[in-house]
Length: 185
Image 1: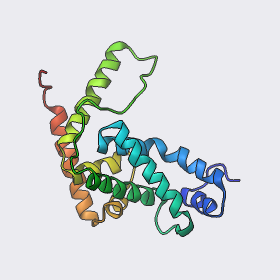
Image 2: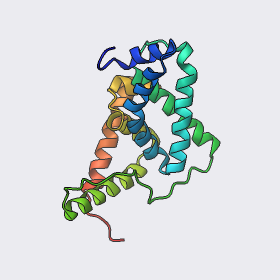
Image 3: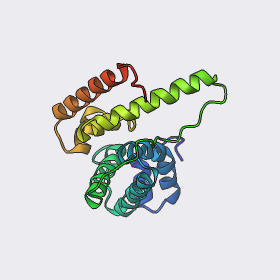
Image 4: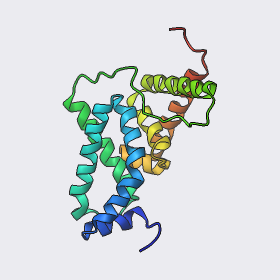
């Protein structure tokens, strides 16, 4: 058995009945996928529901899976579509402003560092909420999933230049929002 097989090879092995191959795929991608969905849904329960739906669809798709693109492109296309379906099912797309991903602090960090990271994370989350959905999606696919521009275009069903433009606008807006002095609460 390869020490670090490619995702598509794992999915093909899973297609042939190798459940351990699916477990490797799941462990490899579950954290980044959950973060991507949590930043979209902004509520842990909603993110968990969509997360489960995505993996359920991946499991159902194993018989018809063909490695025509990277597995991550396939995975995030499914996630993107599941999130859109979630929005359609839940017309009122309200999110608590205080939801943020669970992140464990490094025990070696100084309290000041932990506070700075927490504040920076909150500012980023607040700035992400202000982005149009398409720009937020492009940014999260790049940062959380590590997808290339071509892969982002495939996942979102757009061309490369549109994906590039959305990503550029998102980054510029996020920089501007984060660089602004924090408002007093």
